Length: 335
Image (cartoon, rainbow, N blue to C red; front, side, top):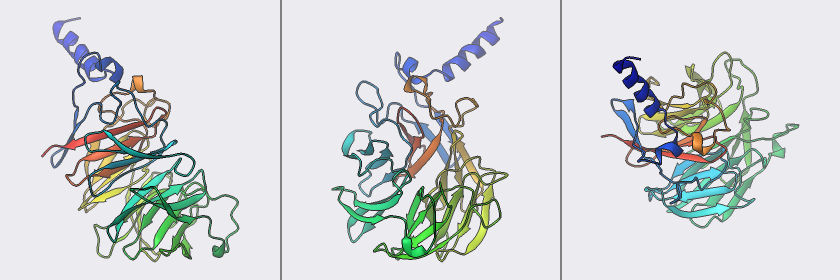
């Protein structure tokens, strides 16, 4: 092997070093993205002093409150971190377990988290400081539907307080409630047609437009995963973009939206829904979209089952992988 080939091999091995091996030295940040959307990873963010994940198995979401604290949901419940990755508080146990999607909303000076729980067949709302549960959204019998299953995967809230809950793992209906939890209407159905959903997995309020509209992640739509726009009245507007792999959720900040892909990457779109950057792409088909990647096989700067994301006030991103060991990462925006 000549000298140049040896150097190339060593460089490749160095870039692909798992987290546990890197800890023997000093894990260095990995730069990703491009142009206006360039980020550096923050090695070890959110881990214990011993370098271990503290959240456990996760299949959830990330939100950021007005103080800059980061909430992430896991099987055990909700964990809250400061911007530098230190534990702040937690809401654990059956009442908070397995929140698949979260949104946070300031209501008259008090912040509340809205959650969708597929395993518990409900949406709900709780105080982000105290954990007090103030609203439950079970299957709305008033809809007149005779469903055999109810498995909500996404939730969002309109400016007027109406709540939208997507039954993404079952009927693919999206249910609309008023702020008191009264059923108002529903729309959507399962299928691969233009106005049908094949796993309406994620949903957010798309404030890039006036008036705001729903941005829905149709994860398993055939032939390719896509994003679609619906009005707040449940009327189809347009197919936004296709070919995003398996888009799991969406989070808007300003003119930009972050879209995790379960196959192991995160895509950032601009207001015209053009891809600006692709972050953390996993080139290994055995690892991309794989829940069972233990912590000792995590690779800095490479994602696996990317599931949730959120921006903070400075444009940094927090990303959660669907992962057996509980992986949440901070991506520091490069100004």
